[in-house]
Length: 242
Image (cartoon, rainbow, N blue to C red; front, side, top):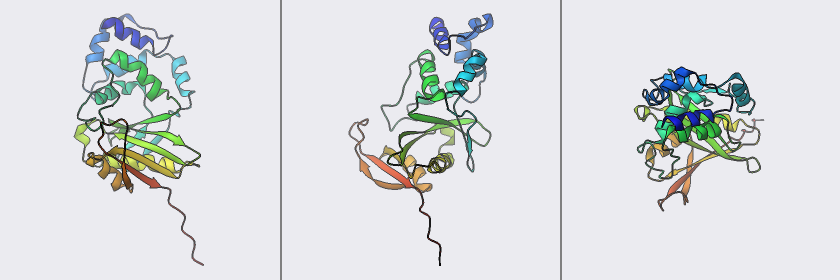
């Protein structure tokens, strides 16, 4: 396990320099603390990155300084410090109960390279935000993808990983913030989402901010259970009274 973990962290960049202390405590750091409470792992990952690596990430066009703010939540770009929280959320069966084909890494060593590649650096097709509550504590993720500038549409997906925050309005607020941001883009006029028909909490969250249920669809990822298509369009300007 120690060898695998070191190899994974080395893949964060060829220039990573490990101190003797990090070697000695690596396994302990990876296993410490619940998401949102322990900082040792986050510090270890951050300290392994050189200035060159940090500059490289910024140059990827992710706009690391982008911060969106709603009534209760903040949306910011992911960093390697979020890896442990997202790893924990992805492994929670209750969080993903409506989507059996969720992303799943068996170990942190397997997860870290994929997290850096997809969440932090971005693959150019899907873009992620970390959702934070009023105290700036990470509580989940929200993403947009399937961008179609020709048709003016984009898909979004929500994952509220901290179950203690369920049913308290954080999900709808995050959806509203991201939707407002996307509809401010020059070519986007429609934001849509797909969720399991049985996922009533998600359907309520989208409905609260104005998404309309278009109808049932077939989702090839599911086991044949129906899914629901929801959408919101860019409001049309009202003609001025003469």
